[in-house]
Image (cartoon, rainbow, N blue to C red; front, side, top):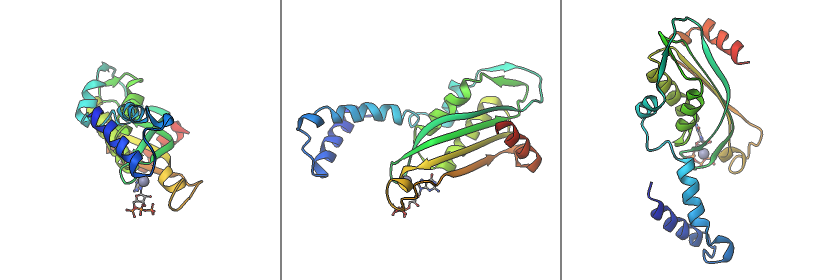
Length: 186
Ligand SMILES: Nc1nc2c(ncn2[C@@H]2O[C@H](COP(=O)(O)OP(=O)(O)OP(=O)(O)O)[C@@H](O)[C@H]2O)c(=O)[nH]1
Ligand SMILES: [Zn+2]
C-alpha cells in the first residue's frame, strides 16, 4: 500500500468536498486515514492461496466430526461504494480430511478475506476456498449475515435489513448436511 499517495489523495479529497484540509481538526486526518486503510485493507496484498499458507498448519486427527466455529465478528467494505459492512456474523464449518487446522486460524482467515473491497457473496466464496486449501477438505460451508451501510445510511435507507448468504461446497451441498450445520451453529 502506498501510504504517501493515500495521504496526498485524502488531502485532495478533503479539498474536493469543500473542506479546508489545513484547519486544525483535519491536519492529521490524511495520516489517520492512511493508517486506517492499512488496517481495513490488510487482506488485499494476499491471495487466497497466501492466506491458506499463512494459516494452514494442520494437526493430524482421524475423525469424521464436523468442525464449526460460529459467531465470528468481522467488518468489511463493499467494492461498489467502499461503504462499511457491519454487524457481520460469520459461521464456518468443514469436514476434516485426516487433519485439522488450529481453531484460532478460522477467524483469522475470515478476517483477512473481509479486509478487502468485497461483496458479501464473494467473502463467502473466498473463505470457503481458503478453508478448503488450508485443510485439504472439499467439504466447507460458510454462513454470513451482515448489514450494509450503503443500504442503511444512504440510498435506499433500508435501516433494519440484514443480508444472509450461505456458501456450500462438496458434501455441504446436501440438505441434511446443511441442516446439521445450521443446528450446530444455532
Ligand atoms: N450483491 C451485492 N450487492 C451489494 C453488496 N454491497 C453493496 N451492494 C449493492 O451494489 C449495488 C450497486 O448498484 P448501483 O446501481 O451501481 O449503485 P447505486 O446507484 O449507488 O445504487 P443504490 O444503492 O441503489 O443507490 C447496490 O444495489 C448495492 O446495494 C454486496 O455485498 N453484494
Ligand atoms: Zn455498497
